[in-house]
Length: 231
Image (tube, rainbow, N blue to C red):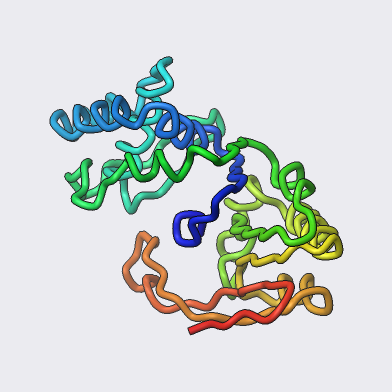
């Protein structure tokens, strides 16, 4: 959303420090980051992947390049960690680490005026004032129209967090901020936001599933503080 809208200034936040640190590294020194990513590209193999998956580089640029390398070569681009916080996604089928559309210099320029935080959502949303635009894409406690994913996601984002997010967004709306959020199209989520926000059901294609039969059109909720045109 940030790169699509291209605002002159923004605050970006995520609870995943590896993701935020990757943005910080590109913002600080995109050329060194690009060089390191190309080294991964040249060395990529199954053995190298698992060696890097176990690595714990201390240099910020190396950590950022490792994060992007693993994301681009792991199964389905999935980010998942075990209870110790170790990335544990197996090797995927893609072999290209550096992509034709890579333009980290442009990313660097876009990020220069941006404030980056690795924090809980509440701290950042509470900064929003009248006229600010908030976009939120939280982990889904439910898997769209079923509860099949709740045991995994509950560890990451419990239902109490969903309620806390709703209350936080409502306070921001009352301060005059414009809110757009996505979530699972589930009766519990609809009930949570109905009456305080506009809730629309949208259709999209799911591409992350171990079984291809589940890679099919699904429905999600678009939650806004006002009217939004959708296509």
